[in-house]
Image: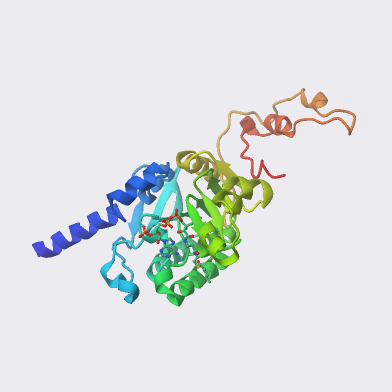
Length: 304
Ligand code: HXC
């Protein structure tokens, strides 16, 4: 019995440590939080209920049978944001670059299924090199299952993707199907494959930023909705944004008490919009004066 408990404790500790201290330090050195630290910032204190902590991959090719880490590169479960339920997955770049194995995909699918069943949003924290190369077609099949759930959940529960590292392949195709995408400047990227592969295949030299950085995707392609300075800013903004959303298509938008009287008069609105259609004015000012307490969360402000 005590041997079983000791084994359980070993696995719990291994799941907490992901790819090990050296890789955690490397993650921090890049200004990035770990998968678990991100969930701590995103969710209400002590609200996270983890599932599938001890799941491991079942690949036996390329010596993978000797490289198993409990959790298999993704932390999944549910929690609350300002008291409201949300399902989450957070990919761990320290474990095989956060790449998606069949089992890793099954973990994500399980929380997506639960979210659809109870009618609550899904927030995916993506920090992944895409399909796990060692697993070949098994990992591609895993992505097919995730994509199908992205489609089934579309219009039913909100899906938000936070891109918080170099994301390639399926780790980009799935977020692209979700409702909102937030990125982190200078540490997150969305591309079909990385610059090294692009150079090998096409001989083209391109930087990660040009290929799919936060500025590229919020100004030129409009793939992403917002870009933030760092992980913490991104996660805290997501908490604010979450407050504006209904939990599912079966519920109304949340109502919050406000001290802003419904009949507040804004006489400045009489003159704020110029008589001449050729004279510019600041729409932000109009919104700030019209909305309750000027509370406005802007999407795609940097788009050209
Ligand atoms: C297995 C991977 C991996 C992957 C990264 N790693 N991506 N392992 N499968 N897809 C591992 C690396 O080998 C390395 O392991 C560790 O993660 C960190 O990666 P680095 O390359 O050292 O980090 P970095 O320089 O920051 O570059 C990150 C990266 C790059 C840009 C994501 O790793 C990259 O280009 N990876 C390949 C991306 C790719 O082509 N993915 C497409 C998969 S196909 P060690 O042990 O050295 O620390 C796909 C199609 C889906 O997703 C279609 C579905 C139908």
